[in-house]
Amino acid sequence: MQGFILGLASGTTCLAYCAPVLVPFLLGEGNRTRQNLTILAKFLSGRLGGYLLFALLAWATNRFLLGAATLSQNTSLHSLVFGVTYIALAGLLLFYGLAKAPTVCAGSLRGVRVYLQRWPALLPFGLGFLTGLNLCPPFLLAFTGAASSGSLLESLFFFAMFFLGTSLYLIPASFLGAFSHISSLRAVGKLAALIVALYYLYSGIILVASVGASV
Image 1 (cartoon, rainbow, N blue to C red):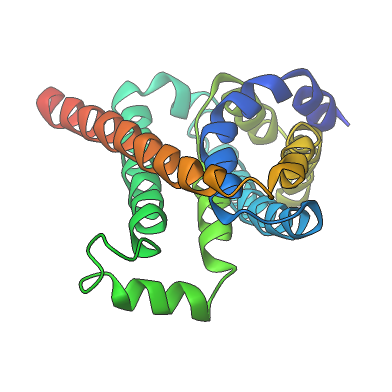
Image 2 (image 1 turned 135 degrees about the horizontal axis):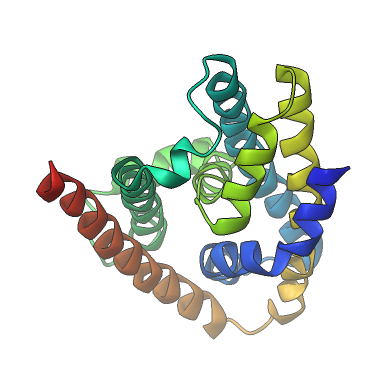
């Protein structure tokens, strides 16, 4: 249960990383609470996928004696993972904000728009997966704890419990559906998604460039 307790204790920090991505998306969709719960489930399933991927990495770290704190102590690796994740997250948010806009890049993004309509779960899953790879301090503590476990199953269980503890803080976001009757909030949500995308894009480029400069 250590992972669950750590997740509960650090849930507000995880919320600070996830809310700038999740809230604009939910507002932009303009759905009611029940539909938002479905979207949130897809978002959380992607986030769980990101956590379990790092659980596997944590087990491999311990298994091959690389040291549990390698990821947090290696500044270049830390910045590279952060930077690539931020750029990918920015790409998804930009696709979301622009692909559904009828007057912005309508021709060039028509294929993206059709693809998103065909696979509606892909976008919230992808956003959740990438936010699940955010290397915030609580996440690094979870990585260290999972790496010190004795088996792959224990590592997966640790991160699954950490995921459960932090996810409790995201459930209230679905109640934004209570404001779905305010049509202008959809435009605000998409604009906010674009602004957040530009922030992540800038941050990601800076981090990746810093790795290149240090080589």
